[in-house]
Length: 452
Image 1 (cartoon, rainbow, N blue to C red):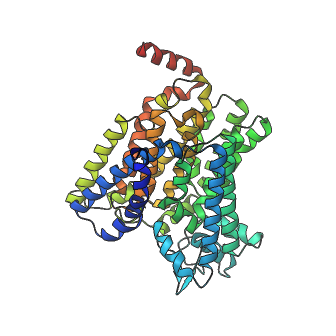
Image 2 (cartoon, rainbow, N blue to C red):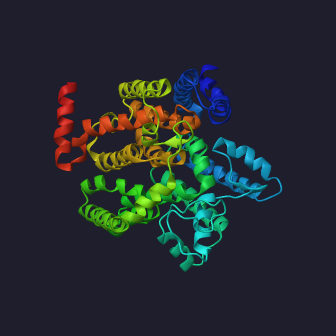
Image 3 (spheres, rainbow, N blue to C red):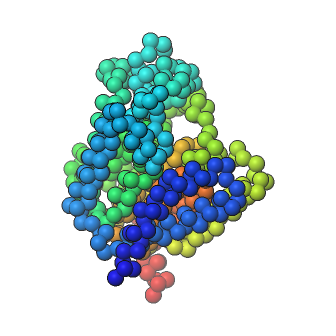
């Protein structure tokens, strides 16, 4: 009887260890520190797999909406605490994501939105790479059109703007859960992971994810008009952040001609928009800088800023390769196994492929902080739909993705996030024929023939 609850009982102390204790102990990690982090990460993934298997954790859709709403209320309560004289309590809890942004004793919520609203209300012109009245004197590294947009609508209060977008984010998660019959504990675990806690505290990435979720909801509508509108949510996300443009190319393979043309149009408009602003885009990337590889970083670029022949770099690279082999062995991200040769799931195959393609390229070409890993949140929701919940490959993928969300503060996170990227790349290439509607029948027929 006790075995059924072992994973769940181990989760909370493991969560505290990977989110708070170990990151603070391992400053400037050695090979022994990285070895411990790698072992802890693998064990934590096993714990998460066990938590998902627990029968009492297989929440129904209605219970999941209720729990998601409770989490939203808890965050709202924390925002109120942060704005009160008890803000020290919020600062302590924010360590489960990263340190809260403060000025003196005051906690500043949604600090990245504050970056935009400061620029919008500034009397100086908005110049990328220069300080534009930022509270922390950060060089401006966002799309310069955004302060103009905020100024046009007189949106200068980052707290109100951030909270409104937080509510939009939580509502879209609940709508997706209800619309696609999501079940199980994965999305609840995602919402309390360090990556999402940090993203909510900073504010900007949750808007991008909310827009992507809105697009996914509209894409599966029975209304042709709503399916046409869907890619335009991605366009808004692309204006806010560049990386969502990666989500569009694979959608062009949808069977629905209207959706295909709409996605193609939005892709072309997005490419033209950023091609015109290419110099500003380069300046934005330069102003952002590269986080150290052992300190809350996400992406391949920080690895090239290290000495490759350093023992810790070699160990990190070998761990990445070992984890990649392990993930491939357990079919992490294998669409052929997840969708179980079901021809009716072609749209889900495309969305799944778009999501893992986006994650892969963001890691390969990016140099972001860990809150960018929130790109996997729609993937967790997709794989938590009832029809995929008990599939072994789907469960393994969810466990690994959740594990990376939770171990993101450990110095070994480069190896885990990179291994997932390489694994996704492998299965994208292996299952590329599944993307083509006219080849899908032949592909699954060949798979069944091999199995027989």
